[in-house]
Image 1 (cartoon, rainbow, N blue to C red):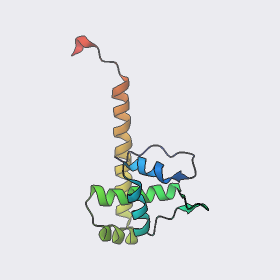
Image 2 (tube, rainbow, N blue to C red):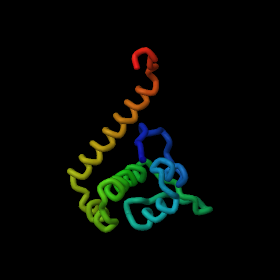
Image 3 (cartoon, rainbow, N blue to C red):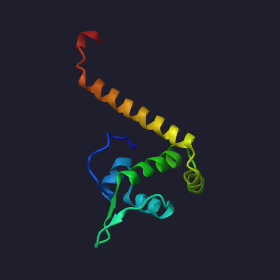
Image 4 (cartoon, rainbow, N blue to C red):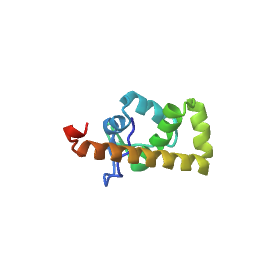
Length: 118
């Protein structure tokens, strides 16, 4: 569900890694790449795509607009074109909440539960 992990020191991510991050098919990643000009992966001689952290951040924005907020692709394009400060702020809040949720779930899983307390 596009849980955001802390930024890695990794420079490039394969299309498979990106698809796994967002729990979507690689075909959707390729489609969004064609539809949104903010996604510009590097391609090697074989044509393999390698995405930067900036591309990943843009995917997060697109994912949030299309999958969570229900915007059409054209609506998401319009918002990205304007890229208002409010959109960026909302996106940062969502990322922070996702990070907090993930942390709390990991914390919950690591705390042993005493059977007598149930």
